Length: 265
Image 1 (tube, rainbow, N blue to C red):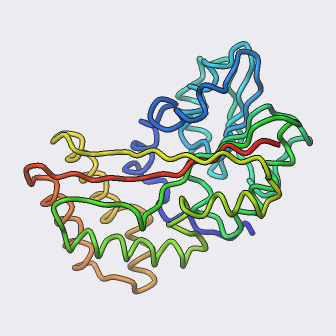
Image 2: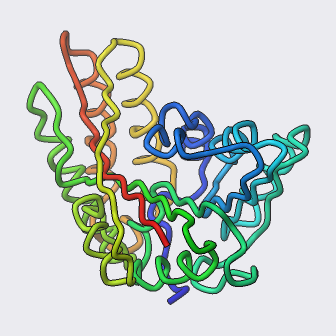
């Protein structure tokens, strides 16, 4: 189960965006349930920006951030060394090196979509949460993303990304599937919600488009699509330019929906 390939990789164009995520932008559905003194596990923590937000909210409780990338864990540890109640470790979501019923909250943000067996991961999350505790998961849904004005290059980009992600063992339309995955993992008390990221202001949509243009040309997305023959360099160049051209159009908007699950143990 640990043979998935991460479609985004850890190029700076990816980790810089991940490092901008906060509790306010990415875990509002969970925030009201966090209390002082809680012990929280943040899986797929990446650069740790959400993790340290949790740490502030549950102090003097603590947060453990786990990611399978040693490089990202090193980055998170160095960046957030002043947050004394947050720790970062390398680990495997299918086989966590923690005891049963160790945490009040187990959280994963945009992680299950990259897994070949998200139900197994949810079962492992359920194992390590305390009775009455919460497993909180938020996943985007690429198939439900929308943008205006129409842009054939973005249509092609999405199709290419979905093909690549599924070839890597993941499910890019994960958002719509997580309630069923939670049920299959044995959760019976499940609350479902949704929220969106919207890129509409000129600067924010330009930055978003620039990030994706750079990913298309320089990240693991580029290397994997070229290596597998899913696209050639000319196509990637065109798609990157298409992103930048779309962002410059007056009134352009990109909508990225995510589905959220609060599953109680």
